[in-house]
Length: 222
Image (cartoon, rainbow, N blue to C red; front, side):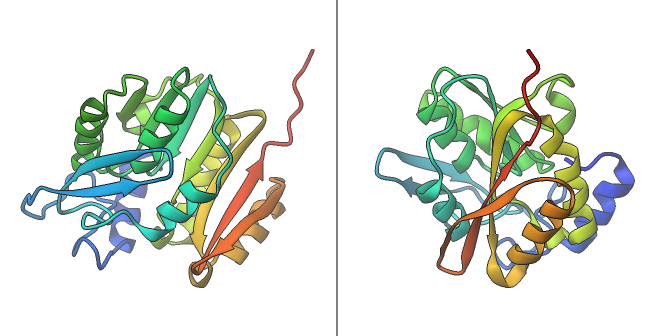
């Protein structure tokens, strides 16, 4: 996630969620633990996921996440895949289940959410998913795909920094799929991505959300 403690502090100061009652972008949430569970039911999968206070959308799987998982094409069958801003893991676990030969990295700054993600992977019997902080991902790792419900409420500078860090780690021709609420700036984000040289198209629009498909324009070298 964003590098350096100063950026972490700035991002945390900007983020609030009605779902958690505190900053879900905090490394160590201060809210008293109150474990719970939510169900993620998709046409091909059903997960019961452990959650807790102090993380994003602990009482239900966020609608934007559902729109993303209902809309994206299947992930690449192998290689390294990334769930950026993974929370307790609904996206990462879906990628891991749909591509059992791939290695899925779930990256977040919220250590309580990451611990839930690890527990959820174990409960689901998925040993091809790794939950951790940015520093836990080997520096040379490049991703065949990135799926993300990004933390829009950290503000544009921090969000742009986040995407500038991770999108260049797509393999040539790799794609990122990002779900963003229309009224939280999906169209302006699409314009910004295109201005940065990332070809971006709207894959779908549903329930007030856009799913953006971002392609790494690099070509494989022979």
